Image (tube, rainbow, N blue to C red):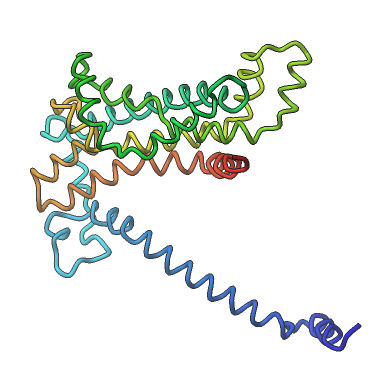
Length: 297
């Protein structure tokens, strides 16, 4: 045993930290401090948003701004949530939930059905098809606004929620994401089921999909957030206040009440609740789905 090892052993036995442990402890303290500062920087705007939502109109525009409502007020929420008050936030919220939920369901359905053949089946042109799908990810979404608008208009879907549910139901990213996950699954499970007499659909439905729940939950959340936060497309295709979604509706609230920061922050709090709730319940699936979807290429 070397002299340094003996000294380290004696120090540990005496309850003293080893000399070599001090730099490691210092690095850990610095890392923790940096992460704490970064976390505070990221969470501070959200905290200020919530605080401002519970302020009065005068307190929300006070200089300098305060971090504690004085007095604590629910006036902003009562104003935007009041029925017949000119700001149908609850209706916008319901529209957004319905549109985002149905869109996420369609995205997961189409992505899984398209990704499984690309991951497990052999057919002519498979790599070409997959390459074309991935290549569409390079196309800026704003370029598709006019073609999609013409298609939706010709189908008679303007000013209806179906106009923001169906056009983005086929997701190139979703196909790529699910294909990567399917490739990472052990092939032996499917081969064993095939030996037992299971056909391709039975294997997909009874074996592959249950194993793919983390990836499906992750994709559903990403699709939900994308539709929930979408602003440009609903503004183009939804005209009546009754069918507006929450982001588009809050923009009209802002233009109508330019200095009512209490109302704006209250609306932002309402819009943030479903996102936070979904993340809390699905974070375990998200971590597992993302970690496994990048295992193989």
